Length: 165
Picture 1 (cartoon, rainbow, N blue to C red):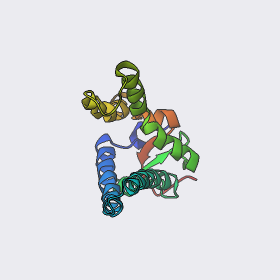
Picture 2: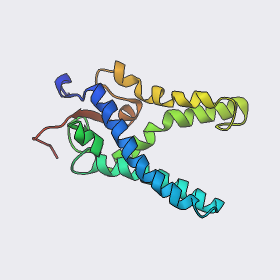
Picture 3: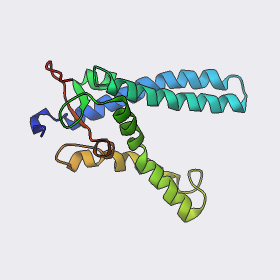
């Protein structure tokens, strides 16, 4: 069991996530501009696909790397570990990233089932609740885990010099 004193502070997790999102979206923004300058709808689709792949690769690569942290988490002295405080595998990092979007997928499926349309409709405001559903449990759970942490079996802890492999 991981001691409570080792768990990452919530405000640091928020700051790290904001930093990471700003950093990766700056890169993504440049890529999207490059793809949309051609005015081809197909290039826009490729740009959006590449942008999503870049965001995915950013989180999965860094969280499964030897640093066990994205640049934002590293800046806040945090890292992602399993329950034995060991480095997570690429597959677990992949699942953790995928699980981050699960509440959104559930919301989209429910919306389509109820209204028959989905994202581009009068219920667009509900989609802004996705981060709340995903991250709110961090405030209430003993191990300060979000939905994605619970599903992937991970915990965000304070970094240390005695990294365990």
